[in-house]
Structures are given as structure tokens and as C-alpha cells.
Length: 237
Image (cartoon, rainbow, N blue to C red; front, side, top):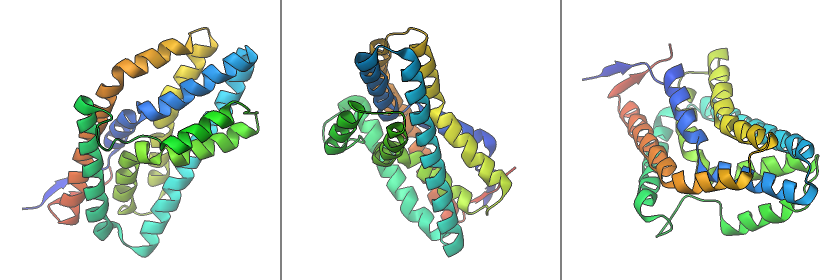
């Protein structure tokens, strides 16, 4: 029996992006950046400028990657067979995130590789306004093991629906929601909040962030496989 569902709709993309946006990796890197900038310059204006450029670079990099992947899948017409692979990968990633709710750091965890994390810290010690563009692009790339699961699933689903303005805006909205918490954190730190308080909040809520992300990835992975098997039909309304 085939059950028709309208997926991904704006609400599904919105919900997935919202969960993906509270990723401890992305939040942790921004907190480190603003803390480093304040320690170096004591200048919240410069922190705001560098932080804004950094977040914009992250947004543009993720958006470009999404369009590139979408175009690649569309042109090769591999959305359906690829869904088996992506669905399986996303399910495994989701299980790892759920595991980290109880046993973080034991076994495999989705995080920025240690070597890349050290590179990020070194770059932050000397970051300039133009350098924030390169830093944002680099961080967006090395964060993918930690943040890319939901985005990969949504992009694979969207690829079946073709290239249109609706798909374009879905990706724009997804990526804007993804960076929205970073914008909020940057603004409230600019207006006086100690970034250490944000760091403390992130550390206390990290396991819940990972649990929610894990559950969303499980759901997306299962839907990808069900769609590839013809159990569900995907539409856009």
C-alpha cells in the first residue's frame, strides 16, 4: 500500500533546520570566536563585524554546498537509488547522536576532528575581518561530520522535486534557520552577555541537542528509505 505524504513541505524543512541549528558544534565554534575576539581587542564593535562576516561565510558555504549537491543529484538522476545510501548513513548518524545522550565521548561521536579543531583555534588567534570569510568557509567544511546529516537528507529529498524557485527558497530558508541561533548569540554578546554563560548553557544542554538531532535524523533516514522503496510518495505543497 502506498501512502501519499507531502514531504518535504515548508513545515518539515523548517522543523529539521530548527533542530539542526541547535547543534553544539556550530554554537561552540562561535562562542570560541567571540571569546577570543573579546580577549584580544576588548572591542565589541569589531567582534560584531568579524562575527557577522563569519556567520555570513558559513551561510553562503552551506548554501553553495546544498545547491551543488542538489544540481549533481538532479543531473545524474540518482535521487532514488542514492536515498538508500543516504538514508542508511543518516540512520547510523542518528543512532550515534542518541548514544551520546547517555554516553558522550564513548566510542564514535559526531564532532569536529581534533586536528581541525586545533587549526580553528590557531586561526582565531590571528583572525582579521577578511580572514573571517576564510574561517567561516573552513569551519563550515570541517563541521560537516557534526552538522551535515540532516542537511544531506533534506537535500536528497529535495533533489527528487527538481530545480525550481520553490526548492531555491527552501534551501535559503533552511540555511537561514541554521545560522539564526548564531546570529542571536552574536547580538546578545554584543549587548553585554558574557560568552562564558552561553558556553555553560551549551554544555549543560548538549546532550538534549544531540538527542533531538538523533531522533530527527532517524526519522529522515527512515523516510528516505521508505520513499526509495515506493512505500511513500513525496510532494511539495
